[in-house]
Length: 246
Image (cartoon, rainbow, N blue to C red; front, side, top):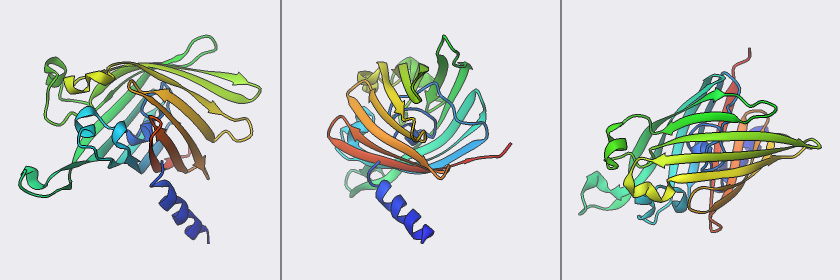
């Protein structure tokens, strides 16, 4: 019975929920945060991505997509991940052939936290999505660096009678000129209720619009997130988290 329930949960959430889970790192939905997971935590999951969540060149195809990711927090100050998003394109890149999800954009992501959160100051993190291909940062053009961006983000948490309130502010620079519409300030707020801390509500500004979502970590391992993108599109992610006992 427990296996049946788990399969039902997986089936439902894989079609209705995503976030920085699509990167394999801790964060909000589209916006990064300066939070990090527990040392030795592995993450692996799948996501359904609404078209408005995707970079400019992929949004123009008017198609949503799917992704998978694996990630790890090897140190308190670092998170790294590897992931891919399916590309809707002509088969074999030939415009005479049928359209479909015939290719994928693969990328490595990393985040470091040089300053941890204190009583009077926020945590600070620096990160990059789609690490490498540095020549594109100079030219603003490239073949497949659809998601590539560099960011700095600050996160501060407050206690309100047992409820945890988080404030997150980021600046992102997308290296492709095609993605210049998302360059600049992004941020959001998070709320964890006193009665069930694994539950979290998120509202964020991703540079183009407002996203709102809810996520939860069930049985200490199964993470699920449901999101409303720009007030019109629904998407979701489900992933498995495991922390090596110390």
